[in-house]
Structure formats: C-alpha cells, structure tokens
Length: 625
Ligand code: ADP
Ligand code: MG
Image (cartoon, rainbow, N blue to C red; front, side):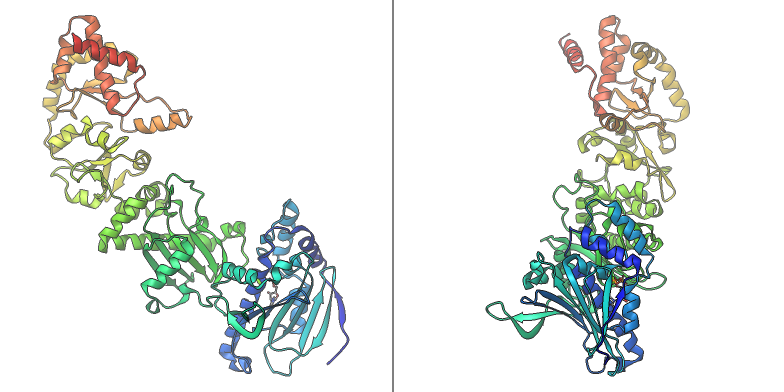
C-alpha cells in the first residue's frame, strides 16, 4: 500500500458550497443524518442491483445494512454502510467535484436566503456536504465492491478548500465519520439519533443498526435494528392484515380512530409508483372551517426515502382529507418543492392518485353504502369543491354527490343524481334543485309548491358551498340542472298549465300586476304571475343567468362588489292576500299589503329586511285593523 497521503484542492464550486454550508446553515441541522443515511441506502440499492448480475460482489458479506455508532471520547459519529463503495477515482469525482447542475442553483438559493435552512442542502444534490454543518472534520473510508484485493481509500477534509486521499485497507462499502463541532454534542446521544432515525428514515428498506445498550445505557458489542427496515406499502397486499393497515394509518395520520377505508396499489408502466391512501373515519376538529393550507395529508417518498409532506402537490384541494403515502420511482430523490412543482411527472402522479381515490369512493358507494354514508357525512362538504376544481373528473365527482330532496327523509344527504334520474316524471327533462340557507328554509320554500303538486322531485341544497358548487354543475348524464328559483320552469310539459291557460290567467291578473309594479317601482325587476306557486302569495325569482341571492349576500359580506341583479316578484293571483291587495281602495293600506308581498318573499329567501321595524309595524297594523 502506498503510505503517502495526497493533498488535493476542491473544485472551486465545491469550496464555495462548503464555505456556505459551514457558515450559513443553522436551522434543521439534523438533516445531515437523513442525507448520509439516504446516501448509504442508495449505495445499498446500487449494490443490490449490480449483484443481480454479479452475485460474487456480495461474497463475504451478503447483508446490506447501515450501522450507526458514536465514540463519545473521540466525539465522533460514524455512519457505515455495506453498499457499493467507491474507488479512488469515484471519490475524486463524486466528493471532490460537483457534477450536478444543481450546485449553482444551490448557491443562489443559499445566498438569497437570510436565515438559511439546512433542509435546502438535500434539495440540490449536494447532500454529502451537509456533514460539515455539524462536523469540523469528516473522514470517509470506502472500498468499491469487487475483488477483495481492490484497494480502499481514505478521504479526509475539514471543509476548507482541501482534502487528503490515502490508500488504505477497508471492508466493502463506505463509512463516514464526523468529528463533531464543539457544540454538537447532542448527536453523540444514542436516544437522539434513534429518534431522528425514526422520524426521517424509519421506512428505509435496509436495516439501520445501532449498538445495543446495557442496563447502564453503555453501548455493547451487539447490534440491534432501530428502524422498521421494510416499508409497509412495499410489502405485498396478501401479506398485510387489516390491523397492519390500521396501525400504519394511525402512525402516519396521528389519528387514534381507525381509518374508514384504504386503497393500496402498485402502478407500473410509464409511471412507476406505489400508493397507499386512506380515508379517515372522522374529520379532524375544525377541518372544514380550517384553512385550506392545512394539508399535511400525503407523504411523498422517492424510492422509499421520505422526501416531504407534499399533500398539496399530490392531491387536489377537494381531496385534502385523504391521508397516506405515495412512493415514486421516477422523481429525483433530492427534489425541492419548487423543483417538484415543475416536474412533469408530478402532474401525472397527481391525476393518478386522484383517480385512485375516486375509484375507492366508487367502490364504497357501490359495495359499502354505510361506509360511503359516513364518508359523505364527514367530508361531503369538502368533496363538493371538486365539482368546480377538477374539470377532468367532473362527471365522476357528480356521480358521487349526495343530496337531500323533497322525496328523501329529513336533512340527510342520501340522494344521488342517478337516483334522481331513475325517478324522473314522464316528460321531465331537467334535474330540479333549490338552494337555500338551511334545510328548513329549503324544505318550506314556496318555489317548490307547483313542482310538488306535480309530483316532481327537487334536490334541496342547503349548505354554504352549494350555491357556488351548483353554478358549476350545469349538466349531468345529458340532463340539465335547473335552479327552481330561476327563469321559466316549463311546467307545461309536466302536465302543468298549458300556454293558453297561462295567458288567460295573466290577462285576468293584469290589473293587480300593474298596481304592484307601480307600488314597488325600482325595488324589483318585474312583477308577474307565477306558475310556481299554489299555496303562497308571492316569491322572488331570478333570471336564468343571475347570481343566486344567497351567493350575492355572501360576496357582499366578504366585501366584494356585486352587480345588482334585481329579482322578479312572482305572485299567485288566486291567493287571498293578493286579492285583498287588489281590492283595497285605501291607499295606505294597499301600500302596506303590497310591500308585505315583497317583504315576505324576501324573508323566505333568507334575506335580511332593509327596515325590519317598518315591516313589523305594517304587519301589526294589518293584524289590528
Ligand atoms: P446525491 O446523493 O444527490 O448524488 P450527495 O452529495 O449526497 O449527492 O452525494 C454525492 C455522491 O457521492 C453520490 O452520488 C454518490 O456517488 C457518492 N456517495 C456519497 N455517499 C456515498 C456512500 N455512502 N456510498 C457510495 N457512494 C456515495
Ligand atoms: Mg445524497
């Protein structure tokens, strides 16, 4: 063996990176451990792959593993793997120079950040240098897998422009020894290392071992595995029991309830990934009211290495209740959020994951209606956002929607659009729905009277989001969705009053309509005879393309300018109150009656009256007279 050590200079860019790493990274220092374990795991992966063709590479030591140990006296921490190792040239090429184009970006990002975060380092393919965040000297000893006669190399540097290289005897694989900086003693604590491993590297597919401790907490010569060493989602489905899935769910979701359902898939083809996706059985406290940014639902792994919580990148917002893991073979390992968002594979991955969730929901709807009902109760409100958000899957999403209706029991949302279509009346071409501020307001709305009288079912939408959602839901299975409070209802085809009869009724009511129009003036767009009403005196109706009244109110409350679209007042000329107004000769009392017809219709819409006191005075006056 050559005894003389060679001293070499780092490539200029490396020196720059090292300088920044040693002087600028203060937060998330512990990241170095993840980076070094991830390199060790890569090295094991590479050897495992090469050994497929050359099994002799594994001879002498066939176990691929990562050992972590500390020497408290020497104040060193060593990460050792039995992976592929490096030749002398490999070391110079991989550690002394930086091939990756990420370097410049890293330098830019780091110089731009005021309080630089060590998390950055792994994102640019320069993870090895993170060792210098906590160490003032790093010794790497390595030997490339191959004939036992091949030489090992010892590389050492204090991260200041130079490194030394020396040929040495070494076992196969690589060991990286960190000589910790004076104030980095925490990384000499075994429990601290174990908890970091559990946090970042639990599901690395190779055993990570640490020395077993005796009763006094002193390390012994025996090793014990400190990670799970096999990622649950990589195990074949038929080996996994429900308990395994539930246990894993609780671990990743931090939920003590069981999951409602899950879907576990390995996809191979032009995208290779495994996904394990869960639907919780209960929505977390204040989930719906909570911020849309609160989306820590999915973990992204690349080749079993945890990369980040990346719910946002992997799932559309309307599926933010989903929990689980996506493990991609195609994304780069050291990927930042920014780089990730620009990756074209990501969009494909996202739509594939979305499809898996929709498949699971389809299956529940079909085969496990009780579970589906639980899902709908917990997350239906959030899921509805999908109608507006996910154009590509709109039809599938619409199929999964559930509503209350004039023919279902109470406020529970149980009717699907397919159920509705199955009950269409002869001659009925549209799906009718009504939006209101609450279930009772919807159920009791006068807008429903004529439809009810004709036995036509109406979907009752009474959640805050419904008005907005329904504006995106114009059609399903070739049927138009129609808001019963808007435009013409076309009841003729449904056995309602035909056009001729209607004309007659309108002519008969010309007088009262004119009288009301004069009285209400600018307050309404128009006054006309209603085909909607049978029992009530009046209601408000919008034009087909007007924004719903509840929506207008919501936007106004949020401080938006809303184009004023005035509603039309429809009246029922047969109603006693309308007749009384028509026949009232006392002008003051006629005014009271006329305003009442408008105000009552406004109240039914859920609107606040402009002048409630005046309204009460009017009602009282009429009651007392
Ligand atoms: P990356 O892992 O993104 O390539 P790193 O800075 O972490 O970037 O590592 C640089 C290179 O050094 C790796 O690509 C690999 O070739 C080599 N390397 C680092 N650690 C090891 C190891 N434990 N065993 C073998 N090669 C290693
Ligand atoms: Mg690395």
